[in-house]
Length: 216
Length: 216
Image (tube, rainbow over the protein chains, first blue to last red):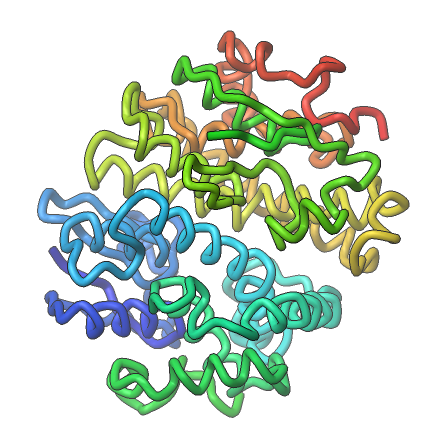
């Protein structure tokens, strides 16, 4: 099994999960800034062309961060980071999907159409006219989430799960590009709880950033 | 176990999965057009306030269609609609996520900010200035997907999976609102293959539509 690793918040989230699980796998680094991920060799194996991805022992490529989390949990169930039964898994998957669709995808898309526009324009279709709307959607998502975190340690109550990692990796990256500029109070308290875990620091990239684009 | 059911493409997709699995569960219909899903009673149990949702035997609520698919497969693994092992599951989850993030979420969001704007304006924050960009993202997603379906029966090769249901439910709904107006050729051929399954017709809603908004 091998992991294709790079700059960026999603590979960072995967490293964080592996640290929490106490797992190490061989990693090959793909040069995102040089668009190696868009090159013929990598894109032929992962037509989504994004990072991270995972090559299984049989040579199959699984891309997309959340399915990679699931694949790792299926093969290394302990400690559980998604859940130890169908209900716990259901709770984590529900929160993950809410977080992705209401928040994190809008942050990433706003980055591509805003601060990252120059880098992305030669690489993919871009819609900079959506930038303000995307930031608006992020604000709406945070406003929705904040009261739901008032009485909870983590998204799934007392369990720290991959849903927290999905949100944390995006928000830590987002703080470097000021999307959002500020977190509401309960989300901020949750962020600090996750940020204090050893895996948060240990999963930063080689340059010590949460995604490689801090200050862009 | 009970399912909260309604108009709309996602509840339709869930009905389609249940038909393919040969499962029946008690269903309670929530009146989406009357915004019953935004009412205090339902939203207290499902703060996402969307449909469908599933109440487990222990009384827990799981919302979000794809996590519901997973919960049902965890409890009723045969016939497999996600996969019978970690690699097959990984393949289906990868395709599901690509499809959702590149296509179906943009279709649903374009509906809310376009043809469905009048209905959604009093219910949630809306960003109609994103409508054209969202349609553009749908076009980009279809262009990306089309060659990848050239040599395949379904998204995961010969296996018909919940990834196909996620895409089919959105595209059948989308055709009623002309988002997109036309499918590229391989996607169209795939669509007809899925559309010819008995579960496609049998999962239409009581009014015989793919989402309740045809012609809006």
